[in-house]
Picture (spheres, rainbow, N blue to C red):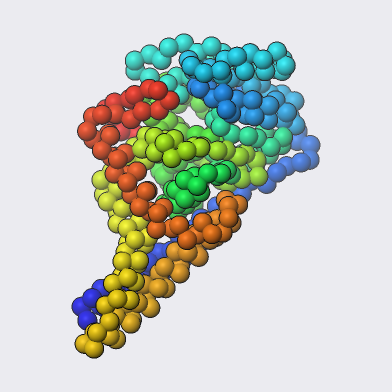
Length: 388
């Protein structure tokens, strides 16, 4: 009976939790494609940092060079690539006259590689607005004018968009959706978009910011040692009293962040613990939620299904029903997520694998930071000494 008194409130709480957070994700405002002419009163400089991006560079740059906007430039910063990225960029620069390719210099000791690459690009930029875009993205031809129109509508100083995430391999489809959903559900979008509150967040794959605001806050030089530079820039901008907004940009920009389990592991262990500001309480709470939602219902189901007896048959039956309900909810949410990312619906039954791997990634991310081993990305290792 004690077991039942614990499981029933647990079931009620997590039913509420799943429904509430699913609805929160759905409330993120999407930026619509603007396919009508826009009064081009502003010039824009697009800065793309690239390190070992031979798989992505042509798709990314070509999409940026074909924007339905007149007053813009593209600055691609080759961040000391060791693959064929420089050669591809050279060919593209011959094809597109308004593409400027910068041969990045070695990263100074006090800087993070990507942050320094962005900083080098900014120093050459001439636009009224700066647009920071990752090399693994692909932009709709109307992305620039749609984003500028949206920024003007809300009179914001900095705008960051959630891209559509492309998922192709098994591990991408199993692990990535739960991480994206967890990040989106944890973000208080209404507070982030409220200029009177301190909450701030940004997605480095797409950040649009007024040049005068960027300069006023000190730009990337002020956050040169921050590995999660997008969130750091958002906090810097909003902390100085400027307006910040996040929104969905699924119709404007697509990205494929990682293509293998190794890349997923390396990429997220670099970001996750730092992304929650090395906060142990948030880490433990996140692990508790993931374990309780994704793994514990299965344990309770198996235990109750094979634990019937004359003395506790009713209790086991109730627990079996409640755990089955939670499993059904998990499958339903995973099915909705599969539709969102346009992946086969049968991936919904893989939900127990997703939280298990997510928990392992978070624990390893914390271990790498706390142990002093540092985080690695694209052949570079960073020992973290400061928080975001």
